[in-house]
Structures are given as C-alpha cells and as structure tokens.
Length: 481
Image (cartoon, rainbow, N blue to C red):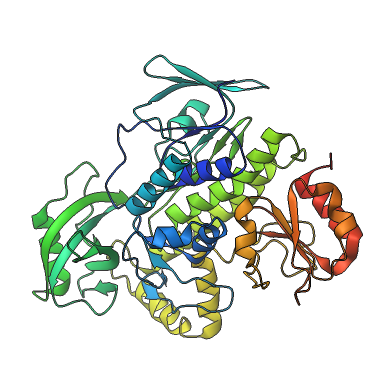
C-alpha cells in the first residue's frame, strides 16, 4: 500500500479534504492533472458555515490575514439578504477561490504535503482491500481509499461509469473578473427593460489596491457556445447595454462562459471510491453555492475516512457520507434552479416570471423569509439525519460556538477529535472508554450537555442521560477498544 488515501484534484475540495486527513493522522497523496495551480479567481464568496468550519480548524484568521476580504451579504435570485444574527456567527466574506487555493497549498506544504502535479489519471481498479490508480506517465498508486475531487469533468467519475443524471445546459452566460471605472452601481444585480442584465460582486483588490469585481452578463442573444472566446468588446457592449455610459471597463483579467447544466451523481460512494465537490454535483454558480458545498463534502468525509483507516469506524460510518451529503447537494441544485427561474436568466421578460419575482421580492422583506433564505444560502439550514433529531433541536445541526471560559467550542474542535461538553462533570465514567477519540470539556459552564462530531455537528444532546450518550458514542465513534 502506497498511501491510506489518494485525493484526485487539488482544488478547494481536494485541499480541504487533504487537511482533514492530515489532522486525522492519515497518510495522504494529493494529485492534480494541471502542471501548476490555476491563477483564475473562479468562485468568490465564502458562506457562514464554511467560515465556521475554517475557524474550527484554526484556519480562519490566517486566511483572512492574506488580504482585503470584505464582509458581504448573500442573495437569493439577486435579491440581497441582510446579515443574519443568531446561528450565523460569522458573516459572509468575499474571498476568491484562487486565494483559498493558494492559502491551502502553503498550509499543506508547511505540514509536509505537496500536491503532485502533472499527474493525469487514466485508469482505476479496486478490490476489497485497495484502489489502484494508473497515470498517463505509466506510474501507479495503491491506496486504501480514493476520493474524486477532480471537478465537473471528473475523470474518476468517468472511469467509474457513475450515473450523473440531471439537466443539460441550455444556455450560457459570461463570467469575468474585471476592474471598472465610472459610477459604482448601487445594487449587485441590474436588469434592463430589454431583458439584458448584469451582476457585480466584490473580489478584493489587485496588487496596487484597486478594487476588482466579478461581473456576470446575460440576456437575449448573449448565449454563445462555451468554446467561443469572451472578448473585451463583448464585455464593453454588455456593460453599455445595462448601465449606459455610467460604468466602463478598465481591465479584463479573466473571462469564461458558464452553462446552466444541473446534475448530481446517484451515489457518492462506489466501494472504496468517493465523489466530492463538482465531481458529484454541478449547477449554475449562483450565491456562492458550488465551492462551499464541495468544501462541506470534504469536511464531512475526512474524519470518517480517518476513523476507517484507524480501525474504529462503525460498520456504516462511511455510508453516512452519501446519506448526509447527497440530500445536501440535492437541496443546493433545487435552490439554484429556483433562483435561475426568478432571475429570468435567459432575459425573456416573461410577465409570469416578472410577477412571481415581484411577489417574492416583497416576501423577502419579511424577517421569517429572510431567516429561511439566509439559512438556505449559508449552509446553516442543513440538518443531518441522526438518531435524536426528532426530539432534540440541536442534534444534526452545527454546534454553537459557545464561550466556555478557557476556550470556545470551535477551538476545542481544532484537535480533529470528537468533543463531549459535560458541564456538570456527570459523564466521565460513561465517556471514559472513548477517551482516545473524544475529548471531554466544559466543566462548570452553564450549557446543555452535548456530543459533537469532529466535523462540528451535534450528534447527541443530554436529555436522555448516560444510556443515550453511550449509544451515540457507539453509533458515531465505534466500540471502545
């Protein structure tokens, strides 16, 4: 065996997973077909739940220290959502994907893990014990498990012949990284009477401190084949059509055409091979859903693979990756399709669509609707199906970042182990047999007892006493040694 886990794809999903595996003490090889890391910004927003997960690993402050990453807000179909309090402990941030990839690359390298680049996967075979990956240069790697994080055109998915049902792309829009001049538009989304529209999002600044923007353009007659290059003249024409002479293009840094294809694999697990990120689900890049969903896939899977490698995983633990993340991915595809419809993505100006959008915009003024949409778009609406979810509101949800005095809950999770909050010191005997994989903390704090998985999700709350705790420990952390 060459390594415990082979991760194919060194984007945000693959590097997040590699970090989780390092934390779990699992030998990991990370490969990518590209000879060097992409310098394209690609995604641009980090939602609340992903920021919480980064904080739980001690990575949030170092990431934000890499540059100017302003607080921003989410939106639903171009309708801005105000910053949410309550469970949204951390507001959204504008952090381009290229920054996240560079940050993770340096972080992993500091811990001895360097992506092996220019490694094109061409073959895949597995048996009951291992996975063998073959590369174009004739080399091969054997691993206990393999994870496909190799994007929308996943080679691993193709080699598996995994079903990838859904809707094919029917149109394209333009996404570009630009520096603009003139009057700054007052809203992130602007529609013209003729159906042409533009969306603008912050991307931080360039090396000289000048603001950069992600520009998205669409509307009638703007859907061209993906292979047609995007030109500066096309960008200028799109800006002029929507904004007139108020906004001008100063610099075009990068542009591509994206489609509205919507697909999801039927199974996230294929024996010893797992699919994550865009290899498992593709959709329009609306509302910072794609990159964040992939990183959440990795956070869910990493500790489970670690448990399996170390021999204490319960029999069905790896299957819970599909059971938990497939519904989460399906929910993202559903909300993106709804947004696309309400945004009139094709610029039809259909009166029925406009009427629905007008009513929905009015509804979005209601605090209850804002809260629902804010949870949906930020990843905070996810509640994993777990024993206890029917009777305990906390179970299945992200643990609140309680201040316990000497440390916050997020800080306790930086070990990559489970955490039992035991304020009355009542569960020392019950939890003792799992002390090699679960830390106990919170003595004296005025909080509810709860058991938290390494990925930050509550899997037990203390209403049913020691018997319920022991059942949850066995269910998620296996039999004690």
